[in-house]
Image 1 (cartoon, rainbow, N blue to C red):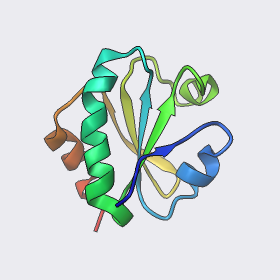
Image 2 (cartoon, one colour):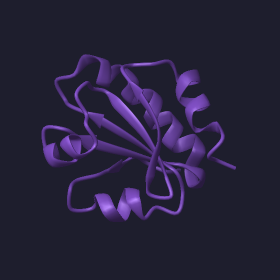
Image 3 (cartoon, one colour):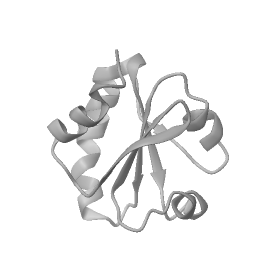
Length: 108
């Protein structure tokens, strides 16, 4: 069973940019209510997609440099990285179906 990966500025390159599987990167904050609404969905996806998809949690309060680099102005912002590049982005709390459609073409 895979778990979500906590990503910081220190491990971002290794965990996200150099990942061998697509990465769903959740830019979030503890105080953000919509972030807490989408959190359990992402946790389920991390478990169910196991070795096909990595779910990375990036706290914008702790990794402000990353948020700035990827122009995160609203949270939750969920970016899909494939081969080190952002290929899709979703802003705001969305249903699981939307997130599954977002990753569908990138996982086997």
